[in-house]
Image (cartoon, rainbow, N blue to C red):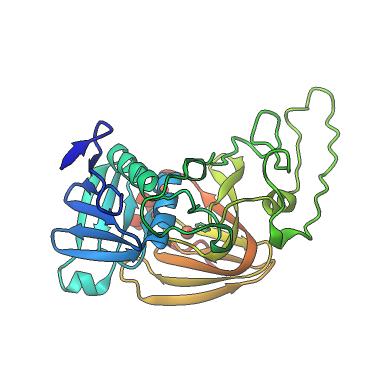
Length: 328
Ligand code: PHB
Ligand code: FE
């Protein structure tokens, strides 16, 4: 049986495990106790449902992000900022050669609502897709409630900077942000700021380390300061980045604490290009023609520096701007 819920979302009645099945164009999505299954006209795919939900959560929360969000080596989305490609095997050499790849271009509003409903229906009360594996319960089993507070968390996005009056606030025990178990040694003192009268809304400072030590989520960059199109996106990482991000622009990484291993592949074929191990103080630039996935053995702090210029994807795709950040 097929019913239409929101204006556009097509989903079925619950299956025998209690989960609805979703249709988007010619793609079909269903889950059971352990796995998510994706079907399209030329093929089908299976993923562990915890990994699937962690990837889906990020695609939803980031509204399809910059460029490509690969859920794994087979399925994912490409953001065209107004429409989204939903693909299977498109960026996988073997699928391409076998002509089994398949792509549909859909309105952002339709895929957004479909993915939101799927995330809501498939996430049990015990599972937090943003939490580290150590800090969440199980994603598995038959349908068991929901976890709306976790999957609809406020996304921190400063207009100017965290701690500027009227902008994103500081974190504390009182705001429900205890210090993470792995950051117990991070000093919590804040800078003292004495603006001249009349400049109270212009002069501000905060401790980024204290702020990050209280992040309840992993692999979820928050915009902590903005200068025109230059965004500082800070995040705490633990275990594996749940997506393989295909860039449509250069990104810079500053490793603020601990260690992250990056696997870097060609964006389109998936062939290996580099492994990068980043330790505190290391800085690297990820080119605009790669995809990457990070591995963090312990909770670590990372600053991602993004250029949000909407002209960049076209400038890079047309060769007017290079895929690398700098000429030496
Ligand atoms: C990235 O793809 O550049 C990325 C995504 C999420 C993170 C860190 C980096 O937490
Ligand atoms: Fe990236």
